[in-house]
Amino acid sequence: MRGLSPNAKLNINCMYRRFWVALIGADLGEGGGDSAPTRLHRRCFLTGRPDHDTQVLRDVLDTYGNPLNTSSRYLILPAYTVMNQGGARLANLGDKKDDTTCSTSVVLSHHPTVGIAVYFTPKNPKFQKIVVSSPVNIHFFLDYYLCANLTVWKVDNLGKLAPRHTISTGAQLSNPLDMSSWFQIKPLNGKYKLVFCPDTTCHNIGIVRQSGYDRLVLSENPFLFDFQLDDRIGKAIA
Image (cartoon, rainbow, N blue to C red; front, side, top):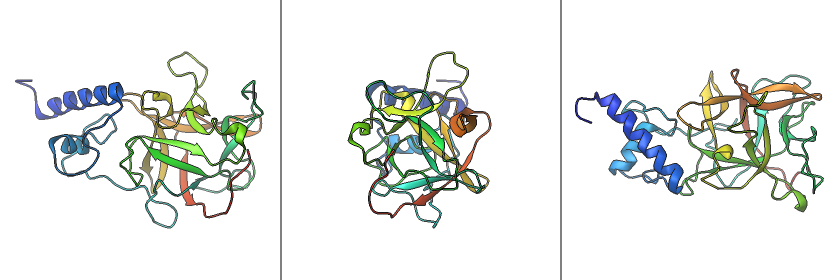
C-alpha cells in the first residue's frame, strides 16, 4: 500500500477486516486489550468507516441512564410519545408463516402501550454490554412455544428489488452468516436510531403506515427510539 495516505490504508484494512468477519464469523480484536486487531477494531468501529484515533466504544444507555446489557430485556419505545403510538411488537399483516399462528411483522403498537420486550444479543459473545454501532440481534421475549423460532428480527427481501424492505421475525439467533439479522444502534439528537449496515452503507430504520400500524422498514428517514428496562414478571404472548 505504498504511496497511499493513512486514511486510505485504514479504509483498506477495515474492508479486509469486514471480509474476514463475514467469512468466518469471528471478530478478532473485539475482546479488549491493546493488540493490533483490537486497535483496528476501535478505529473501524464496526460501522464500515474508520473513526478518529480518539474514538472509544460508547455504551448504549436505557431511559435510566444505565448501559444496555445482554442479560436484561428492554422495551423499544418511540422517543416522543403520541396518543396512537406505542412500543415495538408483532402484528399479523398478512405474512404469517403457513404452518403456525405466529405474527411476524414488526410494528409499533397503535395504542400508547409498551409493546413486547426484546433482548439484544451482540455478534461477539464476549460482549456483555451493548455498544454504539456494534452488530446485534434483536429478539422478542415471547411465551408461545409455536413461535419460539420466530422471534429474531430480520430485513425482508434482502438483495431483491422490492417496493420496501420491511422488518419481520424469523431469523436464526447468533448466525454470523445471516446478514439480514444484524442491526446497529446509533445516537441521534440525544436519542437513538436503529440502522442496518450490510456493507459500508448503513440504512435507517423508519416507519410506514400499513393496515393501521406503523410498520418498521428500511427508510431514508430514521425513527427515534428510547430503550426502557423491562422488569415485569413473565413473558408476552404474541
